[in-house]
Length: 278
Ligand SMILES: Nc1ncnc2c1ncn2[C@@H]1O[C@H](COP(=O)(O)OP(=O)(O)OP(=O)(O)O)[C@@H](O)[C@H]1O
Image (spheres, rainbow, N blue to C red):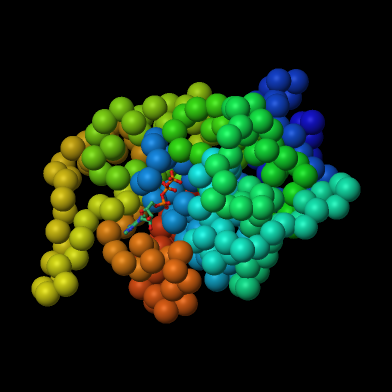
């Protein structure tokens, strides 16, 4: 159970030691945990988790991705690992490693057929997420990126209670920013004493292929107002583009330059908010 010495959030943590439900694995040394969360599904959380991990890896960090979206895991496909299986031993589960050295754990690596639905009740799903933290041999990582389940349900709560997250990146589409969907997720993180590093506004605009004009589809004023009133930073805005849409077709290498341009400022902002760029 809780061991402050090996907890990446121990610096500045205000949790009561006795009530802290974080479990740690002494075999792992994970320095920073970044949760990627959204108020609802389908807004680009997994794509953005994968791109944050890729950018961090390109900067030379040791990186892992924990796919906590147990019932709808899309990380393996996005990383071109859909046919991979994880090895296990008596004491631990070995993550699958990408060609560029990112350690990945997803339920799809442990089931026979990725097309079979995971028909599990909440506590079993939550148990699987906890195991991905305690039983997977991550060893030493600078950053573990967690692709959280969408919304504010049972499993999101388990992730927040049992994994020492340093900060959360909130992903949203512009319309949701002015509804209560994102506020609910932000309030949940606040109640759990986890810092929201900021918001990535995905599918924020499109670029005209003829004149390169940026076309926003949603009235931006209300988004600005939301950010002001919730005192949150905009980590970046992402357009609706084919380079992100085609990530799962193994097209990362061909579109690397475009993707780097979009995601590198976002990752710099995340590191800034984590206090890791002075
Ligand atoms: N900026 C973008 N431009 C174009 N397509 C995008 C963009 N962001 C995400 N998509 C596409 O939208 C779909 C949903 O993205 P993704 O799986 O990353 O979302 P998610 O929030 O993780 O969904 P879920 O909650 O179902 O896991 C995918 O087909 C993805 O390729």
